[in-house]
Amino acid sequence: MTTAIRRVAPTPDTTGTGRFPQGFTWGTATAAYQIEGAASVEGRTPSIWDTYSHTPGRVRNGDTGDVATDHYHRWREDVAIMADLGVSAYRFSLSWPRVQPTGRGPAAQKGLDFYRALTDALLENGIEPVVTLYHWDLPQELEDAGGWPERVTSDHFADYAALAARALGDRVKTWTTLNEPWCSAFLGYGSGVHAPGRTDPVAALRAAHHLNLGHGKAVQALRAELPSSARASITLNIHHVRPLTESADDVDAARRIDALANRVFTGPILEGHYPQDLLDDTAHLTDWSFLRNGDTSTIHQPLDFLGVNYYTPTLVSAATNEAGHHSDGHGVSDHSPWPGADQVNFHRPAGSTTAMGWAVDPSGLYDLLLRLKADHPAMPLMITENGAAFDDYVNPEGEVTDPERIAYLHGHLSAVRQAIAAGVDVRGYFLWSLLDNFEWGYGYSKRFGAVYVDYPTGKRIPKASARWYADVARTGRLPEGKNDDR
Ligand code: FCB
Image (tube, rainbow, N blue to C red; front, side, top):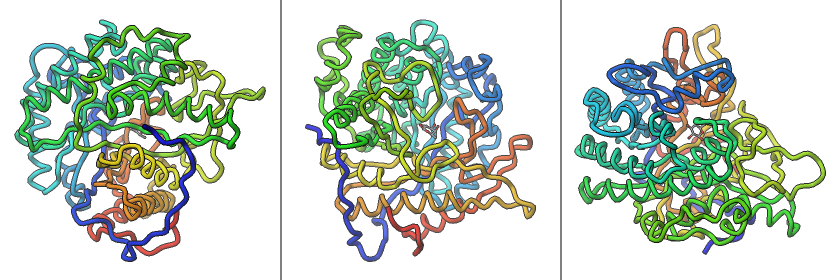
């Protein structure tokens, strides 16, 4: 059962103190390809993002992750920064081609040693490591063999999950299979604005299914290798889809996008079946014969929590005669990331925007959290990403002041706190991102970090927002302030 998409009426904050619950996790997040660099050391083979970023015209300014923030060499400094900020957890991803070159066969011990040393240092500083197995860097050899549209990739992913669990399971208790499979499937194989850059709607739907299947098999593999105290999850960028008006056509456009963005994953993962409206909406493209008997029960594994990434709401209407655009927030393409939704227009919500052009709207996060509770009442939630890019710069005093980011974080954390007050079981929050980094198709032009990175030197400068966030993490409460509304 899923609820209709409607604006949920704001509920007043009834906690009085404004304090987050005891034990709330305060974290920061990164992903391997976005920060590590060291792209061709110690047996690491290319991933689809290496290939894509080295293809002229794909990434702004021709930027690549070859060096990135050089975290692979500067990780001790980065752990020290986190310890100084006093965060309680760090969400990072393993580079698949660094720990299992080519995506098949034996592990690369040097790659695993890197993550062992990193997790040890985190634990020594009281920071819980939260590992994502797949943040978009498929080994290129697996793409050459067909990539996520092919079923066999889900088996390779499960083998890799088992290998990682065997190597790190004594240190890492919290595991996430996939980050935002929507982006992998629909930006990677649909609109082509992400690696591997294919533009085939059926391949995108096949990829979505095989990512789901890979998730289910990987959870089984993790459970088989890890102690029963380990926690398994997936992170989804659940879109909060709003209809432009309450007209039946606009509400139906929102339903269609909700199916393609959200329920294509939450359906099989959390409820054990694909939503019928999704199958109907895409029936003219594919008969879904790649969905085999038993697949949905493999995908439907018990999870310890659901990871939710939220940046901005999605506003849609039925297509009018005016030219629509295939908004996906991650880049412009002539190809839609929404198979079977040609009759939907995307609109920019009113109000201020970040440097990505994304509307700042904490009410979308509040509404989304309440909707998830209504749809999946027993599932604990973790905000695994939230944050904003702004055009930060170092001032003559050598500081980076970023009041817009502080306002953004304040508004969204306030929404989280109020959702908790309204009864939603939110266990933690991870700020995206610890560091400025390689923002996929935008290269280094977008700065999401709480810590500024001077790319020519690699120097790190904590921004004002990093200090602000450290205070929130330390006290478990938001400072009084004008931004305390949704
Ligand atoms: C999310 C990605 C993350 C980063 C942020 C801005 O979709 O998971 O890597 O790019 O957006």
